[in-house]
Length: 373
Ligand code: PLP
Ligand code: COI
Image (spheres, helix red, strand yellow):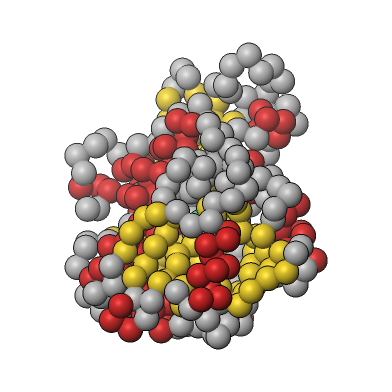
């Protein structure tokens, strides 16, 4: 569905595009090897909310710094939410987004949890359509690169009281031409068990996409890096036994192999992020004849399963990570290898299918592709 065709009155965005465009050769150079989230396009969207005016003052404007009062609530109390999704330049020409309405719905759920105003889905998708259309030249044409879209909302009320949530907010959308989050193509990552820290507790904000969850994860991530690992695996905060997710992606476990392979991903307990990639794989795997379920796996079961050969592959999934094999687990008291430590066939098949749909190489039977241009 096109945002403009939904019947909901569109929020107006004034167009103030940049008068000076970046020369084509400079842009082409930046697009050669953009990394993840380091290069940004020439424009952004802003939209404000206040109790009195609701959503107002929508603008597309040149990318640039935001001005905030130093007393703005977000700077003190971290009332903030964000999203992550991608626009792809498909091989036959169109520029599309993958399941933007699913991100819009999760953005609303995060807003409710953080006592922030809900942005209508149509406005969320409209903002994406406007920015991608304006900055279409920034959608990479290189294989396996895409335009990462980062919508966010912050509390701007200049007041230090904590007796109620802020009463004014700023929505912003920026875009970043990106390669995968892990450098080096499809390389198996090494993960670290952060047993001394917790990311999210029951009743907390683990299932909301809010900056504080990531702030709380960085001490563990630092530990991971110090031990030669790429990412932290978070365990449940109560027993430190059950595997939940990673710092910026969900986890999937493959049991068995060949025609007996099946997929399992930890169930949504309220403390992990309901990933849209994860959700897509719960549908895509059965499409490929691989049964998929939500379940639970303890650390001990993970290790024993790899040692016995019952667990054959493990991979991370998320917008930024796409599907990334996990090759090895490390902790302060040892570790283990998954399979032979190399990308497994189920991981690679699912990766090819998902990227195939996103880049238009294979049919999109579930209507996940949202055409923008
Ligand atoms: N878990 C966390 C903590 C994340 O930050 C992400 C990334 O967005 C995911 C899981 C995967 O979610 P999605 O597939 O919607 O990108
Ligand atoms: C995403 O995959 O969109 C994420 O948000 C992961 C991350 C870089 C925080």
